[in-house]
Every structure is written in structure tokens, then in C-alpha cells.
Image (cartoon, helix red, strand yellow):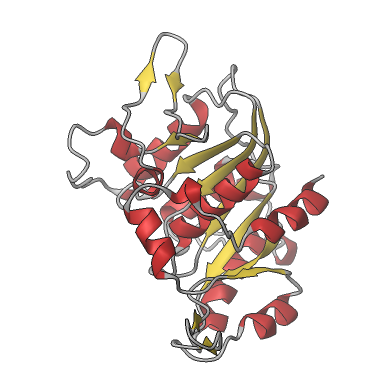
Length: 276
């Protein structure tokens, strides 16, 4: 009964159950070499988490790091589209090899294994979670400095599987400026805290629109609350990303790697200091 009512927060629990044992993380492929693993999460959908993952990957690659993206949003994969990657996943007796973007970023996504990228993936949670683990254990991530995991939104099966099964250096939480953001971020932050996973920082997407005439910031979705949330939890703000039609055009064209002014460039400097 104790395990059925488990909150995954062992610090406040006196039960002697299997959950109190050290986490049994999945091991990456024997030919993989991954230095740092970061999950990008959000408490709700529609905040641009996948775009943030893509921009962070581009910022890291710009500094000379070899980056991989594990697209864990199995039923709504969008990472290949952002990078214009259409090459199918190849494999042999050794394992699976992720296709590379034009800039050399390794990308593993279920969309690259479908004959038609518009085909729906109608799977139940356990199958989806198992696929995500296979993307980590069966794929050869060769000399990757930073492996970014683009999680589906919320705190359901897949994020929980990732938190429990893959050894993470930390997570980046993506939010938007709406009033309810504090509650949504709290859900993701509390989940990370329960699983003893560090929060590396917050990113506020769609933070504002810059007027092309006067340069004034227009807060379409209301005033930003990211500073309040960051202070409440003690997390750094990695970036406030404006709404930019030019960015959307690059994503639609599969040319995210040509982004010239990346709001996440400074975030990389902070991650370097944090992770070493």
C-alpha cells in the first residue's frame, strides 16, 4: 500500500520500499559517449519547448560543442522539421545511428522512422515510454558533449520515465508570461525536486514583441512573471525570448541553424559554469 501511495519524495517518507533504493538508471549504448544530458521540460503545452530545445542546441553547437537531440515527444515530434532533417534513421548489428543536421547536430526522432511524417502515432503510455528509453539505450550517441532531451509537456508518463531512467545533469524549464505560469512552473519544479534532479534555469518564451518602429517591448500575453518565479525557487533566468516572425519562418523552413541573433547564447555561458 505504501508504494501505491508513493509521492516519489523519499525525504518526507519513512516507508522501507523499493523506491528508497538508489535509482537504477538505464545505461547508454556501449558505443555511446555522452558528457552531459539535459532535459527540456514544460508544465504545459504550447509554450514553445521544442523551439527552445532547438535554439539551445544551435547555441551550444555555435560554441563548438557536439550536440545531440533526443526527441522524446513521440506523439508530437517537431525537432526534425526545425532542422530540415529528413534522412531516415539507419542501423546495423551495432545499433541505431541518428541522422545529422546540416550543422552536425545528431537528431533522433520517431518521425525519422516513419514512412509518412504525417502518420499519427497512436500508442499507449508504456509503449511510448519504452520507445524513449530505446532512443537512449539503442542509439549510438558518438562523442556527444550535450545530449538534449525534448520532453513532452506536463508531468506524465514520459517525463517521469526520463527522470527515473536516464541520469540527467539537470533540466531547463520553459514557460510563458501568463499569470498562471507560477503554478505551472511549480508543478515541473516540484517534480524535479521530488526526483532530486537539479533545475538549471528557466526560459520564458513569447515574452514580448519588439515594436519594429520604436523598439518598445509590447507584452502581448501580459507582464512577465519570470523574475518572481525565479526568485521564489532560486533558479536563474536563462533567457526571455521575444515573439519573432523571422524565427517562426526559420523553423518552418527547417533552417533554425541559420539563426543569427540567438537569445540563448548567454544561457550557454551559464550552463558551462554550472556543469563544468
